[in-house]
Image (tube, rainbow over all chains, first blue to last red; front, top):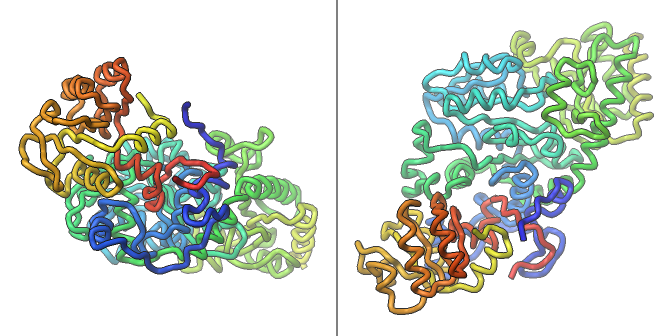
Length: 433
Length: 153
């Protein structure tokens, strides 16, 4: 009998977790242990040589964390995944495994502020440079590629720019140059968009956001497609004997999950940004309801966008879920639909009439909408990116990242839509006072 | 070709003696990794490589035809175009399965052994499939595609 292809609603609950072999526990046990015993000296040697699979130390792998890794890999349609302590750690694990000194990255200009800092400041300290381009033009990526370019990096749906990437077009550019395309898919979550289906090679997530979904737990996941040809001559770290792991050739030995194995055994093992089992369990509790939550987040955000559009105290609204949004057609191609309307996640941006000062009054006037910098919570969250998440960037960098001085970002939560609209309306009334 | 989870599980559960054609004695090579893994998971491996007397503690045979006992699976680490004679030998030996490793996909060999009533697997690694379906690979974050409410056996 052919294997069934299960739907994401089923994968979100079952993938990566069958009943516990030792106890029969149906829910996922929390393996809160640093270390695992060896059966014999021979077993220990085989584990260290990677000749057999098993757990040694929770900085490398842990059964509770593994359930999260496999579940996100399944939801993304990927071959394998590696979890880490935060979304930034997932991004660092991916980039630091691909890149070495002297390499170059072409990245979308409109990125999460932390990603801009990692690429332009932190990786630059190690001699890795980045060119930021206008991601709405796929050819801009091609124009910026140099002989030493080793990765393309972008977000499927920009935070807070709300820019959608034409993933297939940029993947074509990457593959024509023998390069992997790395996509941050945090804002849509794997339920709304699967970048691998459009040609992305590596997907990173801040699991802190919609995957965990309740504003309680930090975590990150990196997924590999299993399809990138790492033996094309540009990635000796994948094909040559690893000096960091006694001569293992990761691509030859592990094939289509060789990149994740190398990220685990070289990068995560050495830099140590491992996810705790307790956190993995919390995130998985969230993942089980991801499909339900993403539908409601998207539906509420669309209602908020429509309300704001018609509001006299609002100067502009940016939400690709609106049918007249310039990228709505691309949204339809890349994102899951609900009742015939493509879902656009819970994030939107708008300008309060009266500029930055009125925006700050709006934020202070909210009753239950929380002023903080996270996204993807059950609660509705509001923030002013120019003075918070993107504060470290100058105004030109802010504009390149899609951040305008009067921009308010809303991460629309799961409260009743009438209550959300009420709080927005009364806070807008205060913004003009 | 057999490719579904229940058939692969049956092949890996019911067969214990694995002749490995093209097994390398170099511990870095994928064939050696796979053989070492199989030894540690209850399989007896029978190396087939004329360049060595012994690999991983087992006598190495020059050819499949030289093996004086029955083997269950003939596992082939050779180029696709070279597989057919091993398929014929597998049938002659009374093996129950021809397993062509990742990247090896000889359709003629597949048809030949299936016509003789053998199981046939192509373009898959025996170690990876065993680890995928019997537990270990899951711990490496790999998407095993196993969805089940039964305890692993």
